[in-house]
Image 1: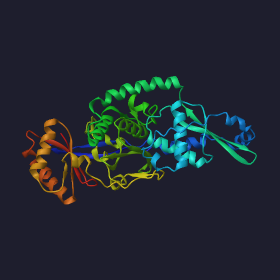
Image 2: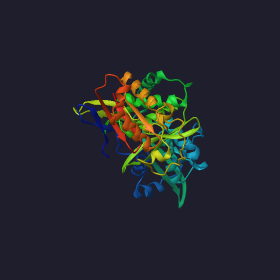
Image 3: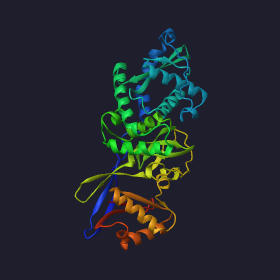
Image 4: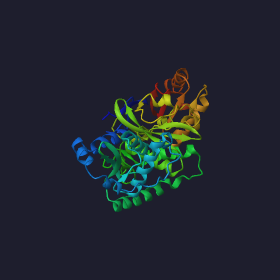
Length: 398
């Protein structure tokens, strides 16, 4: 497990001390790795294959091969599959939603089945009752005639319905402050802040690989965060997918989202941060750097595993800093001072991003070194700040 990323705060006043910027990090597994491990562990071994190959083909023919229900047209991962993979995706998803014990797939190819199953996990964040599957291949002589798919359920159907009802109540309550008619940006910001304010990052949390950990116990890891983002934004009619890969050498999961026709990356795990002062007291802090990242920004700390075809994200129109007027591309001390005064009045932290290093250093020199922050923030005796050269930002905690 990757250690939590730490950022140092400085206190500018009569006293000089440091705080720590704690950031939730990666859990044990990413979605595609979980699926891959379960495909392997859930597969029949060679001896079983030999035994099953001798079983009557009639056993497999008794299984229903369901009609395709193309409810996933328009889903990001689904739309990037081939025709055979989409058919398998439709069949497996229908079986999971119906809680079927097993079905016969239209494909005979294991690779098609595996790729389709992974895509289901990338498109759907709410399938909390299933963890992988078992497959069986049937032969007649040397001919492969059937491929059987059996989901591995973690609970009975009645228990699933009971838990789903609890999740529905929580989601209805949580989404009470946003509506379908709100802008894409407002929906994403709402969900991002919602998860930061209601969920604790906890390695080893129960049900951490699904949304139960977010909506019922409110303790999760990155897989739970990513599933919850996908689930909540889906409830609000937004497109996206769960992205799996690594972050600083450890398994990680985050999201691809679409706002106003353009794609961005979002990492709710890393957005949920905490500032600790010199006495060890914690103050929640939302890091908006990870709410709407470009590909370049995402790749500073994230490496996708390559299984999902991803777009090149270059749009910045829905970046938090652009939207909120906290992106500075020209020297304007009154504008900066006004943002600081507003943050102080609200008792909220503020992060300012600058277009270039020279502009950030000018702001640092003027407001911090020369102390002109006092010209805009009355009755200020100390200030916690963080100078972040990677993002070209200065953050202030009032």
